[in-house]
Image (cartoon, rainbow, N blue to C red; front, side):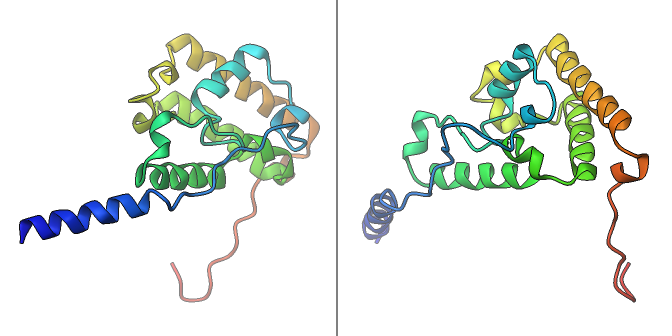
Length: 169
């Protein structure tokens, strides 16, 4: 009985190797990238590439172990969630209030140490920010917010929340 279960599991493991998720690779110019709106200095960009852009852009650098299932499915879902939350390559498509919120979120997430995720830094040790690197990203995000505050009316930087339906909340 144990041999039959083991054989079935082995067959399933082999079969799922042929079911691969679509990769997040879109080379070339990204016309809606954050850099089209705000300056991204080279030192900031290198930190974003190392620690953020695998999940928060349209171009993921895949590790060798992405060729095996179910790991590839896990990574594809993780990247999809990251892009849904915030995509540096599609930043210019966001309404101004969302841009403002996301820039603040970068600062908060980096400052609290919530980003990059610990599940990412286990393998990508170079993505663990030093205090100076954290400060570089935080200062950059603060400068963008100041630039936005100078450029846009204050009420345009506030996200309008949809009212709750009657009886909810």
